[in-house]
Length: 138
Image (cartoon, rainbow, N blue to C red; front, side, top):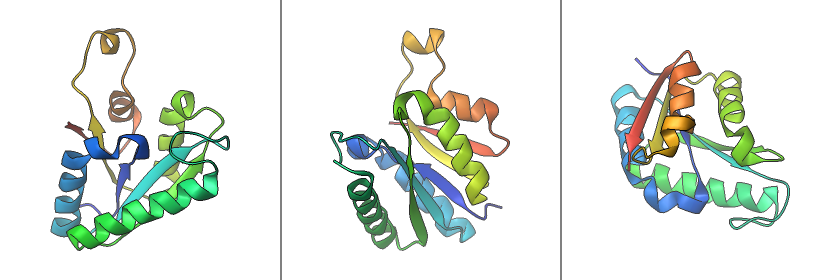
């Protein structure tokens, strides 16, 4: 059913991605579909990495650890944005279009008051993407 699965990865909060990573690995095995781990960074120094190249190395290491742990195939791809928080939705939609994915497995927090005024990133993708989007609560 699925040929390629995308998992957005926030390396600053990697410890809260466990449920989404497990669901993605399970679907990857079930459908023999590789996973594309997508990370978005800025060209400026940040809390995760000082450069996009350092961020890419960390994302590649993270993806390799996931692939080894779950015995699955996949790859990592970094996108650079001037303002990752503002551009996240647009950048993830771009990653979907450029990489031929047909499902997204995305971690999300339990909605609060802010989500009644502003859509969450996962909610945006679920509403606007033309592919299946699985929102996995932490």
